[in-house]
Structures are given as C-alpha cells and as structure tokens.
Length: 278
Ligand code: ADE
Image (tube, helix red, strand yellow):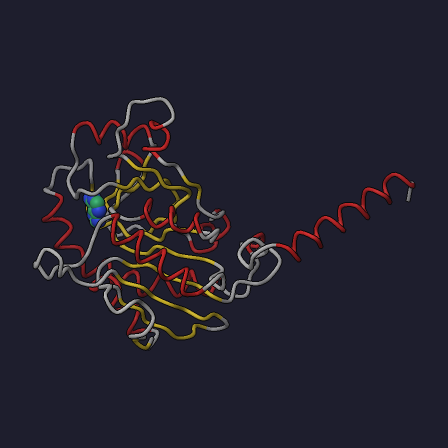
C-alpha cells in the first residue's frame, strides 16, 4: 500500500473511532443493530389490534401522570418495542382520541426523552388519506420517504421553508422492495378535509399520502436524533369523489387490522439490522 493511502486509511479509521466514542447512542446507530423501536400510533382503534397481537403490556409509569398518553411495552424477536398512543381528550371534554400535531409531537418527545437515547428507530404507524394521482389506493401500505407540512403558510423568507418543514425519513427503499409496499411523501396538517389552498401545498410537497401527525413526530425525532419512518395505511382517497370522513370511518377497522399484519413484517425486517443495512 502506498504511504499516502496508508496514512489516509489510518486517519479515516481514527476519525470513525473518535466519532463512535463521542457520539450519543442514536448518532452511532449505524454501527449497532437496531434493538429498541418506538411505534407512535395516534388513535386507540388503530393501535389495539397490533398491541394485542404482540401481547404488549401497558406501562402506566412511562409517561408523566398528568399527560393523556399511553405506553405499551414488550418484545418482538430481538427488539424491545414500545407502542405509544395519544390517549383521549380531557382538555376539551370530548373524550375522543387526541389526534393532530400537538399531542403527536409532545408524546413522541416525552417517549424519546424517557428512553434517554436508547431508541434506535421511531416508526409512526397509522391511517392516512391517499392521492390516487400519485398511485395510492384504499388499503395500500405506504412507507414514507419524507414528510412535510401543508397548512403552515408563512410567506416570509426563511419562515416559508420553516413552515413546510421537510424532513427525510430513514432509507426505506430496500424495506419497500422486500415487503412489496409503496413509498412516498406524507404531507401533514391538522384537518381531515382538504382546503383549496392546502391542496396546492400538498401537490407542491409531491405527497402520496396525507395525515395529521407524521411531520410533528418527525420533528421531535430530529430533536432527539432518532431515525424516523412512517408506515401508513390508506383509508380514503383525498382526490376521489367520496366524503373523506365517511370513507375514513368505513375503512378504519380494516386498516387497523392491516397494520397488525404489516407492522410485524416491518419489525422483522429492521430488528437486528444496522441502519445502513435497511
Ligand atoms: N387519516 C386518514 N385519512 C386522513 C385524511 N384524509 N387526512 C388526514 N388524516 C387522515
């Protein structure tokens, strides 16, 4: 080996070792196999079949007592698994699921803080609207390639990009090939319906699917340097002719059953693999 090549190799190896020694567990996640996965699911109905399927146990001490969030923990193959849900609304006195970006960001942040750097991957699983113009059909399972917001319109330089808030997912190409799932961008907003102006922004985001949590969850993951991906089942067609809420309600049960089937497949693929092997 030529002297300069040898020197470069030594310098590179020392740099890699130094990085590994000084990084937090999540920053060195490429070096170690995935063994701890958090799965964030907003609604109880979406999460229950999967929680029961894996016989996960409720952990009442996981979240602060004054938060509505729920945690269910256990093992799947070689992985520690924590499913978090957003719980039910008590603030407005409705008792419905805490959907939307505010509870999603907070629950994710608290869960990752509680795990204190041990989470290797966070998966946001749940239902979504699909764009048939971008290849989505009812019941399809999508893996997210990235997320963006469509209802944060701030036309001031710098704030405009902040509002859209694009974040890339961990690489899902191999996973999608192996499991025969579709891939695409998930666009997030706090409404189930589609406003005309939002529609333009969803198109600009090149969205395949639309939800109410992914962008908020990915934001909290960024703060904790935890890799993120979304597993989303289509319940309704955003650019179709049926009323979204009706289509959503009629397909919610089937989509939740489908998550119970697809999530273990995703876990089986990621658990024990390093991030650069996904
Ligand atoms: N979840 C399921 N369908 C949705 C839609 N159309 N918009 C936002 N979130 C959803």
